[in-house]
Length: 70
Image 1 (tube, rainbow, N blue to C red):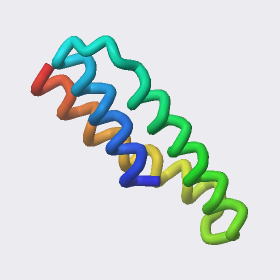
Image 2 (tube, helix red, strand yellow):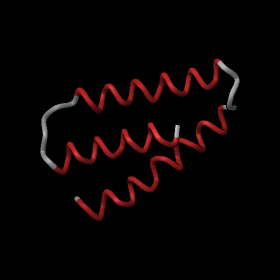
Image 3 (cartoon, rainbow, N blue to C red):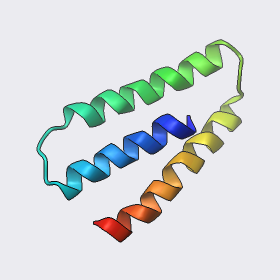
Image 4 (cartoon, rainbow, N blue to C red):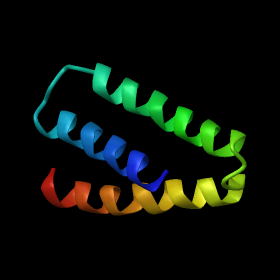
């Protein structure tokens, strides 16, 4: 969750920074984030609390750096 959520925010930030009008990568990565989360729950590898924590840890650094390079 940490990796896919960090990549998702990075791609969204790059789309904003480069002023690209291509929403397909962002939509695809958001979908993949959901698939990763549901597969981790289905395999009982993590609890929902752990997945949410991984999501936050992946998103927060990207959001903090987003303000530096936008």
